[in-house]
Length: 293
Image (cartoon, rainbow, N blue to C red; front, top):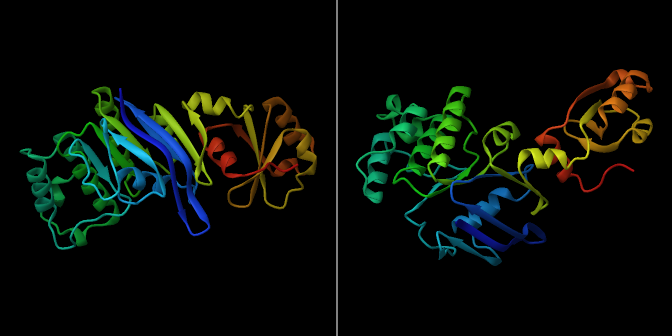
């Protein structure tokens, strides 16, 4: 059963098309991760789906009901925003109580309370919390009322390693119990660990979609040579596809054996590091419009 269907979503800001004709589905019990570099459109898409931002066109159906901009978020859906939105002077205990009253439940979910270690924060004001502590509070609030669908925007950002591990365990368990989760993520390692399906966005559109194994296989390469900036890439073009990489690097995708020979023998080979391809390469290559030819 599809719990979320978004069709032909478009959103522009002046001449910049932030979301360009994107369609996406989420089925019951599925964890879907939206990946992409900054500016790829993933947060704008999520906010249009939530109804917080008005799309230029497109339709959203949540739990078999049409959902539009400005409508109240359905009671069976939980949302965690990228920016924490609570009154600055409200105490954590008061925020939890308020949300419990809204959703008609006696207490916040104990598994999230324990995973996010909120007990020591209950008496603190929201404006006195660190960014990571605010994220932990908002994650718990998103799960109050035992929603069937949860939308999370960068849920692991600002969390310490222990809290991230605990959150991963909770999300896996909730998914196995039938909860559906759509999230944006910046850390590809977390997506590879968590997601049943990954949607890679670039330049406002979906560039690739599938399981982690399918996406990595789609690279058509089992290894990547990382060259430092300033390296002459011309000799490497016979070894594979060359793309500009992050932090002033070049990425060469190809066969491991061929690339290893290049690292050992081609001029400048000592400046290259060889590794296996991964999900991050799918995101990086999708963000580059063209390879170096």
